[in-house]
Image 1 (cartoon, rainbow over the protein chains, first blue to last red):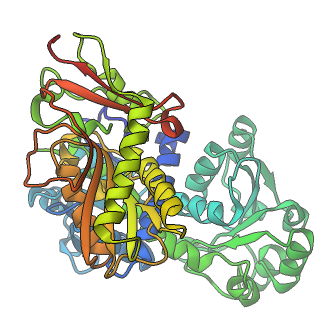
Image 2: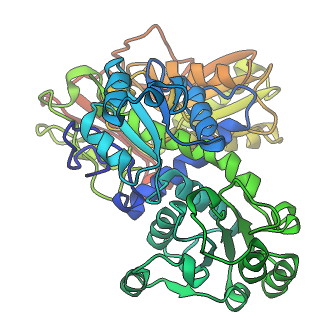
Amino acid sequence: MTTTLDTAAAASTRSGRRHLLSVADLDHAQIRTILDTAAEMHGVQQREVKKLPTLRGRTVVNLFFEDSTRTRSSFELAGKWLSADVINISGKGSSTSKGESLRDTVLTVAAMGVDALVIRHSASGAAHQVSQWVDAHVINAGDGTHEHPTQALLDAYTMERRLGSLEGRHVAIVGDLTHSRVVRSNLLCLRTLGARVTLVAPPTLMPAGIGSWAAADGFELSNDLDAVLPTADAVMMLRVQRERMSGGFFPTAREYTVGYGLTRDRLNALMAANPDAVICHPGPMNRGLEIAADAADGAQSLILDQVSAGVAVRMSVLYHLLAGEEGQQ
Amino acid sequence: MRPDSGVPDGASSGGGPLPTSPTGAPTSTDGPASASTVPAGAPARAVMSSADVSRALRRIAHEILERNKGADDLVVLGIPTRGVALAKRLVAVMEEVEGRPVPVGALDVTMHRDDLRRQPTRSPMHTDIPATGIDERVVVLVDDVLYSGRTVRAALDALSDLGRPRAVRLAVLVDRGHRDLPIRADHVGKNLPTSSSERVQVRLEEHDGVADEVRIAGGEPR
């Protein structure tokens, strides 16, 4: 598996296409390139005419086997603003519900002649698997509990716009680490950009074996949110993923909020320690569970900036994957 | 000089893939690439010195003002990267002559190019449109080398997405001929007859860290 953005000479996959499957495949320079291009795309987003002709004649298929509002519509807008033709296929209501396998669905879609497949699936590694089957650029829009690369890129982009360079900045990622695909992508992205990262979760939601990864990569783990907050430049709250839980991770929602929610009291403590600290959430939020309304809606909240940055970052990713000569048939 | 100024069709020596940029420098779509693709052959020879460049720019600045009857409604937009430096220099002269500020900015054309699929992906450069906007203005596009005309075509497309200028004019430091499209410059620093196997290199102090110079490299020795 090799993802290459911008390096035309880089090693290729079976089909010789460039993909975005994991943040682990991106080096510092490639992340920098994506974020810098995203900044230019963000400029376009502010204009009256938001359309660029760059991907005219290209076709992007959003293949979503899991529910999504922001990621799917964000990819759709990104493709459309670059003049690509975009179609959406969701798992529900497609042949998948008639029992078609992932492979058959993907090959059927690919046979129509698409240039890029944006895929979300509940199985970790689905995007990688798909990239082995098809002759199109594959973008991972979330695979199970594995990764969600564009979310990490847009988080980094959003935080950088407020905080400046993330080098040496302290980012706390708080919440349901076990079921989150955002956390792995974010960890990889932030570490590559030189940020200090602390993962905070109740012991039951710490992924098994993360201790050795933390030791090897130099990030920190904590079960005590109140101890971490005072030194944080950014706090990223993760959604408690009730749909992935079969129960037993914490006694009650209330107890979770008391221990790990960004409550009004914790918000005040954070602001007292560092008035410039920012708050992120990849959405959708469980208001009152992991994040209080004051934290979600205040001036220090970047949550809507994240959404707006999402389109710019995805435009950048689509551009870098699809625009170059390798895409020529 | 942007790589495109020398790379229409087969100019990438032997039809092979373009040289890939060195690792970690994906944004270097400019200078280094042109320097590394100079074909072996005649050594580079200077065709404009620093003083020549300076005189040409002063003349162009005066021409623009003369044609526009002053600086009213002018917006000067450089095409990255060296066009931006040239635009700033032109505006400095105009402001000195007219005694008032002239809006200057940058217009990146990467996303509007027609040759994106023929080259490794390049990163877009910064676009900076002055707060005045371009509606009903006289926009002067500035670039270093006019060659195929494809960059200018892309710039015209980019402009139409940003607004509706009253008029668009084109100022270039060097016109080397070999147009692919019906495009001409209104203001030219130097007309430079070249063969298409030669490469024109523009060096600007603020961009390249060396004294201003225009050189021709490659091609058959004369």
